[in-house]
Picture 1 (cartoon, rainbow, N blue to C red):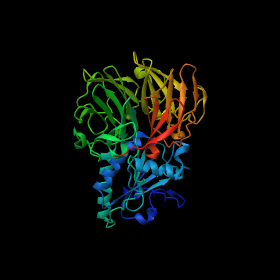
Picture 2: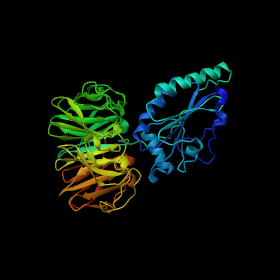
Picture 3: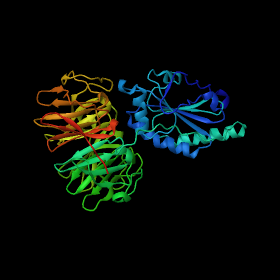
Picture 4: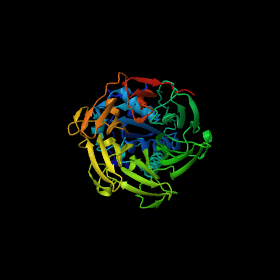
Length: 475
């Protein structure tokens, strides 16, 4: 069977390698199995693959080499510095090249993110696998190819050298979301796998989570999160969208204990129908919102909005067929595209529908979805004006503002946009502050609080005069 495998194309010499000064060459990797994967930093499905790749690298550490080729969806992802941020945010430790021209993508006949190309020990293309969730298939294939190489006397037993170019040390690391009250500030310190309770000056009062990725219930720093994101308060409970664990957790603010509401620690793809939340699997929850005793979850990995009754402990899909698309309609007849931010306004959810570069409304009464801004998965840009002509680029957060307005974290435009829902117009407030992939927003105490994710900081914008300043979060 190996005789019919085609030769894998060599990687071009002109690629920009973002986290290594020693670019890999396929010709120099004979005797090993090479896994080349094609990804983009905005995709939840690509992010879901990263732990699988790390597991494969660990399991086959003496014979597998993993190489990442970043092929961007958005113009904002083309610069090597932006790719390096994505590499560090996702904690990737294998060599990654930026391929904004899609040269390697075309050489390998790739048509979707993510795609994995598996190359045997003689440099031949053994398989091309599209999509996430194929860990067992890839594990079996890699094992068989390594055994084949050993049987032919070709195998090289050598561990791959990690490729790491870390971010500067800071108190926060890629904070994903923020939740402000009149007195306190809660920060999802996503890259440090913890949630912080601070005062408005940034002084840390309490820390929830050990600071190391894990999926453990417990009190305070005995508990463990993985890439925590959206936050929502309900009475004395702080709910956390624990994205890396594909779970929703709760923090009892009376004693600091952390419990799991739903999720199993692994991605799940079943649609809940008035389902018990115990043992219910989820996929990459990104944000949360509370209305009464109902918790709403932006289930980014499933392109759905879930509704969880916190009293009955039952869950159902409020909106979204599961398909990645921008289709208006009611409930399962509508389609969302990686919903990543939630806010509540006038008996509706406001949704930052990231992969559609859109802002959507979901009526709580019946799950009817309508589009405020955005016209398709690839209709993105940076424009203001009427909602019909305005363009966003991968927005990841929304927050209800005064007088029927909605703030939008226009993440890949490094901007905050303001939507007037009554006038159906979009404007861009001038903050006089440099934003870098903002992905979290909250309005409280006369201010807009911004998780300025790419700069590892929280920013406070005074709503009375628009002035902005950094909140010095420090333990």
